[in-house]
Image (cartoon, rainbow over all chains, first blue to last red; front, side):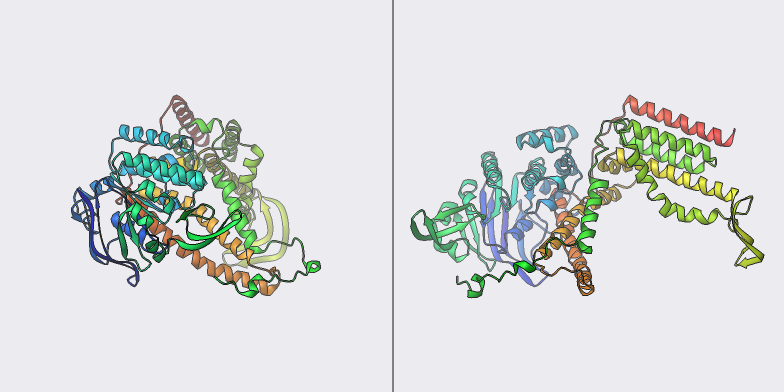
Length: 274
Length: 312
């Protein structure tokens, strides 16, 4: 079943700054897709479109066979808004914006409560998710007192309690220490096994192959320049260079200086692309 | 990538002229104080997490009974009864493991500033005529100013008692509300407001404002530190202070824009998780025996003081 279908979509911020340029894309149920692109290439905008938070300037975004419009997601869509919100969860890049409740427990409960899930079921989900992510000890803390990694965990928990079939993640490894990054990758691998559709916007090439089968590459002029098997795309160094995801680099290994192509996922954690 | 030559040159170091220390400028002092005040007064929740008497009472019950006590205090016209209520407040502060000195200081620090100014003129014969206690000035003829007529300026017994009644009433009410906020987590105070019929959206906006103030203060602090790390001259001169003031004014705009952008994103995050104009929540409070006993005591106490005030 096709979950998302995007046809000829353009998106302009403030009606003048282009963020997406003639995008065509479809995502099937149970797929894991990485959206790759340099900063500012339009990855976050695409995720917000898929989550029905913003709407295209031109073109069509279809989800579960229906065209996403402001009207259909805002009261006039009958049961569709609730159905859609239960099915699709977005984990924002900025955890601070996502965590708006007074305590971690309220935060994790917020989604299922709004979606009319029964109290007993909510309590079970909250308990299980907190146990799974090992954040029970944070339950009564205010989100603004948490560390970056803890905030990310709570943001993930707050979406997982909704139990969405589609999980959208915006730059999930950004600002996390290597250990938390690893934890996140392992979580995504586990979620992948449950058959969920996972769409990750990232420029962290190190995690792509582990968490997705397909990769969609955005160029800096906000177009899709490649769409295919993740492994093949990661091996296409010309393409990755062209979209500024990797660069030519002189590198020293003890006494030997050599030159190769290189990607940086963060300041000190980098991988070689040969 | 070619690095320009000047970037590899190091600036000469006139070590002997480098000053050490120096005062913080007003922007820094203000920011540090605001952040510190918020940390101390709102976010620390030191007493709210202590295991004391009032902390064990359901926040909704506590909120309602304390508000009733405040309303009662404003109806009482006998100073001694109000002072009795004040003494009881101190007693409950003690039972709730609140340091008495801190508690008294917190209440009385603001009383002279706010109610003191209001009560001060009422002590004099010009405003409250009556039996003179201390005469400050005596005039040879009657002085007419607007509606007031007087031949002397003195503190009257009625005026002093009136001022005492007013100040003790304010002090007791403030003590009660301080006691409530000290012994209850802010989150619980907010949730309890719902029981008083305060609309959900109002409570939500209030509690979100409270959290994001913290984030915004941090953003402002970081902006200031970023500026400080690139500022060489210390701004103690008049011109420097003016520059700082200009900087603050322009940053207010930036923070406003940042907070607007953030509010947009928060709204998106809420919509993404199913929010559509109305927040649904579960009550997690439970009424226990201690709450019933406290309610019974409060109602009996209120009846008692009203009886003492009006019937005895």
